[in-house]
Amino acid sequence: MTPRRTLRESLVDAAERFASAGVPSPEVDARLIAAHLLKVGPMEVALHSRGEVPGGFEEMVARRERREPLQHILGVAPFGPLDLEVGPGVFIPRPETEVLADWGVRQLMRAGVRPGRPARVVDLCTGTGALALYVAEVFPGGVEVIGVEKHDEALAYARRNAAGTAVTVVRGDVTDPALLADWHGTVDLVLSNPPYVPETPDLDTEVYADPPQAVFAGESGMEVIHEMLPTVAALLRPGGLVGIEHDDTTSQAVLDALTAHGGFGGAAVLHDLTGRARFATASKLSD
Image (cartoon, rainbow, N blue to C red):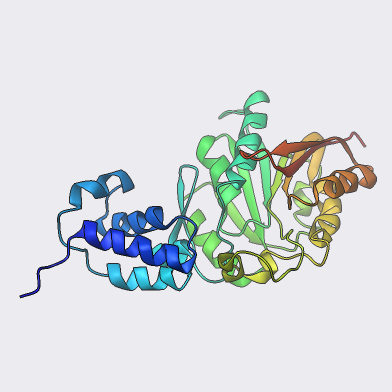
């Protein structure tokens, strides 16, 4: 009788298969799959290492070996304190975007936002609702937050993630200057992780699992950013702030676009945790 393989043995085998397939973090991904099936935290998987392999492990390992995004396999993506539902049709939030979310939260804190002194926040190209929900999580009762999404599949994910929260998700085109007309001139903070990647066939495999309309923005990567700035300017109150994620090759182009628009001042670079220029921030000038 062939002895049953332990979870530890299966984790080692899965990590080796992932490494051969080019998965960037093979041991971590194997452990996260096991943790998901065991319904424990990743650090608790070791406590089960001598036990049996949980049902479904081999199927999930085979999917990851084919380079299907881990988040699609698990059905969720972590984002700060949140676990967001994800799948085909919606952009998977990346850890670096948490830097932009945290920047936005810090600006609101400096402004003294709290229950009874609320702020208005808009997340343009909300996708899963990540930025909007992050802000709302930090300021329960202290913010009015709207997430705007154009595409049906992503819109459905955002609405499911926002169910039961203070975030309102609406369908809209961020390049339409009339978007959210009732909020024009009243918004304290606009955050956006728009499509910004220059069109190229040379990216990591998992990137192409995201919907292309959420990733690519023409040859320059700037098409959506250029077209959304009039909307941002219309929404913000004088002194209101904007933070935009962008490709690390277009930092200066985004700063130049903010300055050239004429409605923004103090355009500045915000770096990610690796020191790359990945975000641009600015404030709305007085009319």
